[in-house]
Length: 99
Figure: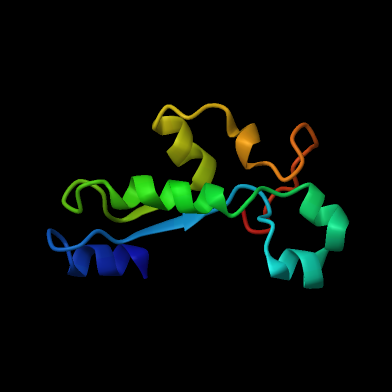
């Protein structure tokens, strides 16, 4: 869908995908997938919001048809201290299921 829509709307709107590298502390993680233990090894939703902000701030003409990973977007923007996004700084993070 991303590649098709990026071509269809080329020059008008940017179409990109964004995915987390680790699990994100959401209600689904807390209540359905892993409870407190998995949440402890997750990142806060703010990492997705911040990455989306940087993607959406880019020119649609120059940034379309991409598949982004949240921490790579932030690193490219010069944000290297990603511990601020950890629910529990210093613990090993749980990789996302689909990355």
